[in-house]
Amino acid sequence: MADTPTKTATLSIDDQTFDLPIYSPTAGPDVLDIRKLYAQAGVFTYDPGFTSTASCDSTITFIDGDKGELLHRGYPIDQLAEKSHYLEVCYLLLYGELPSATELETFENTITRHTMLHEQMQYFFRGFRRDAHPMATMVGVVGAMSAFYHDSTDISDNKQREIASHRLIAKMPTIAAWAYKYSIGQPFVYPRNDLSYAANFLHMCFSVPAEPYHVDPILSRAMDRIFTLHADHEQNASTSTVRLASSSGANPFACIAAGIACLWGPAHGGANQACLEMLKEIGTVDKIPEYIARAKDKNDPFRLMGFGHRVYKNFDPRATVMKKSADEVLDLLGIENNPILQVAKELEKQALEDPYFSEKKLFPNVDFYSGIILEAMGFPTSMFTPIFALSRTVGWVSQWKEQLADPQHKIGRPRQLYLGSTARDYTDIENR
Image (tube, rainbow, N blue to C red; front, top):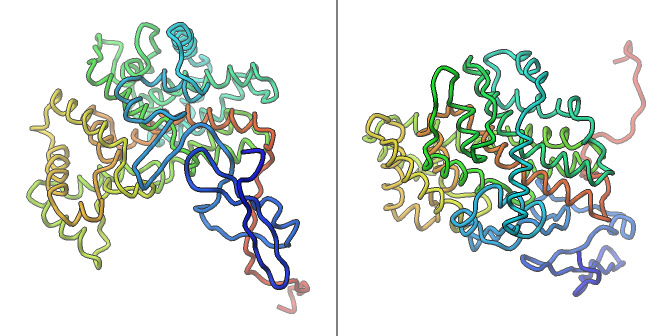
């Protein structure tokens, strides 16, 4: 935060006034500093969901929902998705600047050579039921990493923080792929150092020991874009969870496991899964007009999933890039025999042509297109959120590192508006 406020606001309570500093960010609305409000005025602010509260200052990601803008360290997401790739974006988020060729090569080599899991972690996977949701497995395995990697849990040691950051980014694809393999009863596939980050993940998910598997570069590129477009999204629920867990001094693996658990919620990370389930409910192309009519009916609880966005009031800047990937993947794999993908393409077409959706700015968002891509690749819906968690790991890690380096860092302690009973005496059980 800036050292000096740009202006002040005056708050009047009864016959007292209080001056509150206002700070101006490099982008976005001004921020009213209420850190001393309770000490000076004896009152709290009330903001359920923290929708009007800045919990920290950050230099990582900026979102302007009205403009449909998403910047990572100042770089627009569409440029990064088109011109860069996931590991370069990881470097940018972690270190603040785009790497030189030498820096990128070193970073990629480091990540590639951290992808193996401790061999004993195989037994940890096998402790779960086969029908366990892959997200449940990921929460447990990531949290358990602190039991296997003792040399990177001391958050006061900068070197250990760096090692933990690299390990989490490198090993998350292996953890997600093994969670998937375990859920379908296939043998684990080890990572390969000769493959790119995205291609390696696809290879670990879809190859089997009995025959060679070739990763199509179009699918690999589409997977890399999914990773890139989900890498960070400012102070959302799971990122805030990571920061809150970190504020207590918890080890990095516990903090990221907390983020995964929060992301698992259907209101957060399950949007693309909900979108595919909606497409399955619609079922066939001929039923689309009926469901569009229902979506327009205020008295009908049905809503089109994958359209519009809570943050982006105009359009989702990630959706344009994701649509391009969806078109490339569908052209490669074909949709003639997949009714879900046929419904998706026709629903997109009819919704975009309908004035109701354009006037309300209900355009297809990143979840709509990512769900289509993952379905076309052959992933079950249960893997959609684990892939989201894998993508978001670098954002969580970057936010975690930034918070630990913040001199204003302190344990999180939200307040409350208490509406319960006031003090009362205990009543003995025979008198109740």
